Amino acid sequence: MIIQLMIAFLVGVLFVYLSLIFLKYITFHNQHQKVPDLKGIPMINLPQIAADKNLRYEIIDSSKFTPNLPPLSVIEHLPGPGQLVKKNRKIYVTLNPSGYRRISVPDVVQITRRNAEVTLLSVGFSIGEISYRNNIGKDMVLEMRYRGEPIEAGTLLQKTAEIDLVLGNGKRN
Image 1 (cartoon, rainbow, N blue to C red):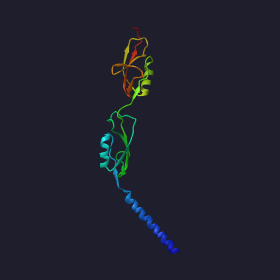
Image 2: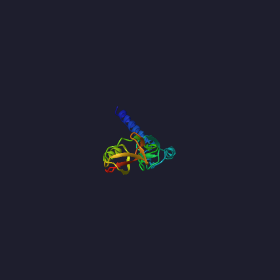
Image 3: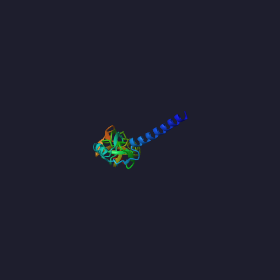
Image 4: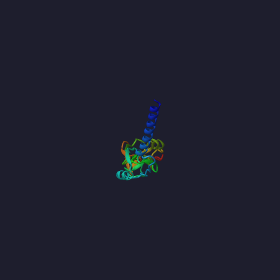
């Protein structure tokens, strides 16, 4: 009976040892490659680069537009550039949208400059030129302009558009 237990123990140890060797072989143990820097790479070039580097990728949609990168290019990826991964590893890629979304211009006419700026900045617009016109309401917004043309509240503009404000200077006509 003791001999049978010893044989069973040795067979078990041999099975575990062979299993570990087999796992090292099929999981490419200690065979790593560096992840290339994909930032700024257009989406159309991604399949070829992934195939050349023996990697797979999955695109993660992005809602944040990065103006200094081309539309539909890689903003970031995980694992990051230079990290060591195994062959055929999946890289999660975040793409730059094709542009900013369009949002409605809030009504800031007949409120003060400070309140108007806070309102416009909070929804994502930027403040362009500030000009003054004779009106008794000092620093009161009289008109909004986009690229030199008057605009109304509710107009759809691209997020981060620069809106010019025409303010009263506190003088009567």
